[in-house]
Length: 583
Image 1 (cartoon, rainbow, N blue to C red):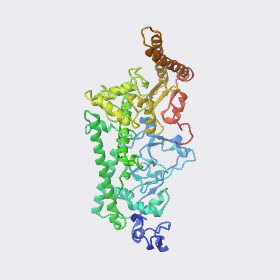
Image 2: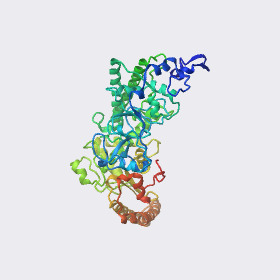
Image 3: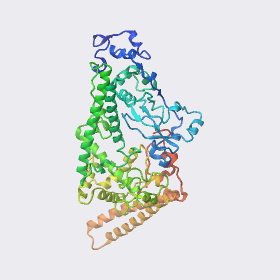
Image 4: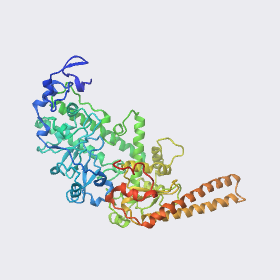
């Protein structure tokens, strides 16, 4: 039994036997048999008021139909999103819990709340609890946790909250930071393990925690500590596309960008290490403040493991497990290169721009003209027709591999272009494949990574023939009823290019001047192209042409899942997307 749990537990006769008074258990709400708690911890329940007697602690709503009413924020038309700092839209930010993460983050979901939730309420099956607290500043956590500490996070004004994201609403003047710090400390975790030894931490469990008022000097120290924890966690969360407040890729920030990508990454990696170590120091300081305030310095230490620093830039948290430093660094480099590629594709579609921070095109049916109104003279222009071919060769000038190379030249210049490209390819080649290049990544892993990044609700959709000979990406928010027809034109053009290549190969195969080796090679490639042309003919006839004639419209509010299935076999299949319920 660890020092953190039982250094002074009960009156120990030996390490396997404890003597404790039933009267002591009655001090704890619910009277659990928490024999490992020391007298000092038990006395806190009688010495201090319970948290629920001082501030509201509430469970959130259940919609009874999340597929209908809940979305990831990136699915919907951004103009219909009620951003916390704005006052518009039917889709409101939604605290729905999520993975273990402390201080800030998990801002992923929105809930349909038009006309103050009239549609949700009209179903008769939803449970809309604690509506008087909706959009108030709050501290939330994920109700199910397998970690030793509670993943508490700051949520500002504007949020609604789910049953999976119960919350605390500090009404005490200037007590927000100390309360957040207390809930994120080892003290609360120790007491919660006695109040509720399960993995399901409900509002009632938090209400039963004993809460101590800090003296003014300690309060000031705690306020500064927690403010810094939230600030660093917020910066980390907003450094990735999954955040609606994402503005630019850290690699391209002037603080870290050098002519070589390697030097840029090394500078950024140094910053990440420093920020992780600072978070570690702050977390330990936060623990120290409350351990000292509750008089438990002989029973608990303030130490925090590096894997508990919940920053995405911290590989010990991000990847976990029993991995070496070398393995962790390789994984972090690979993911950082994937994020660079993803951002570049976003710039290709006009979702982002290197010339303006934040989202550019993010509303339904927006066009290149809408983009140019915001970015009149782009250094790296957006694609004009919202279709980017992804093929095994430079068949089109707007092929995704060619466009990424253009992006790289604009972002880091020409002087070290080859070195920068090699650095990306080496970083992406985590399996050490021979002759692995950027095109191999786009053809083999890019779309899988995109689907994973956007939680099986991708915003770039891959039109793909059955065996993958033809692939083209489109951006959902720029989709229009004629988009499939544009894809069809690319397919037909590609088929013509392949047919022309086939004619050339057949001429080589019968040319008297060609060597036998060249003839054999030409015949082999010709046979492959014949099969590819048959595949493309079938794809056009059976799938793409019939779909193009329908001129289908999509409604972003319906969500990616419903819309993706509308285009059926024309798109690359996403495993599990057709399943009922949430993925």
